[in-house]
Length: 313
Image (cartoon, rainbow, N blue to C red; front, side, top):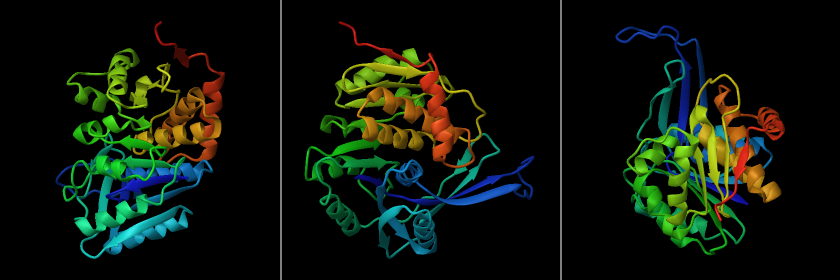
């Protein structure tokens, strides 16, 4: 079973505004309200791919009730902890203005509620996968993902970490199964600029040397690179398509990778499905559906552009 953790779920209010002007009243030409948060996005795309998962997280107030309602309506299994104070955040995403976002802060999470979440993790078993994704709220210790990994009842539980900076680095000695920095996050970790697949490879190797088992790097229009557990690099340029929105593309990559690995235990197939899922979401106005992902995956499997680079002798 795959479990996802979203510490700070949201209602994502995505709007398109034609000819946006500051200091004036603007009206939307389209709008959409959907549950959000990186872990929830992973669970949603897994659902689209026919892979079951259970979403953990915290909700509060009337927005939390709406998050839960929409998640249940989508058929996603969720075990949310309800906070007595505050309200779950609303994130405003201006899709027509170069991906501009205004993200809410969300409720404070008391220590007692964190302990209850930790108790849920005790039910995981060897062979399960746990996805820890997203930023850590200010009311929560910054090393919470590391603490969660230490609390797991078995070393045979695969852990995926999608976080930035110190929150990610603190987990590496515990050997997460997969990490997925984008090119900007990768550059920030090593105080440099990473814009190409060849530039990403040595830094992916450093992260693996620091403990990560598999390192998947997304590079937007430049494609993606995977350094797998066997020390083999896989890379591909981005599939052709029209960018609509990058929101959720990275989360979709994680879902695609896990679905591919679960079905085949083959890193090359998992990598291609990850890129197909991320790209399909980027080419859509919502998280990609199975048909869209599979269409891109078939194109990638027939293409000679996806390459595998064997490790040096």
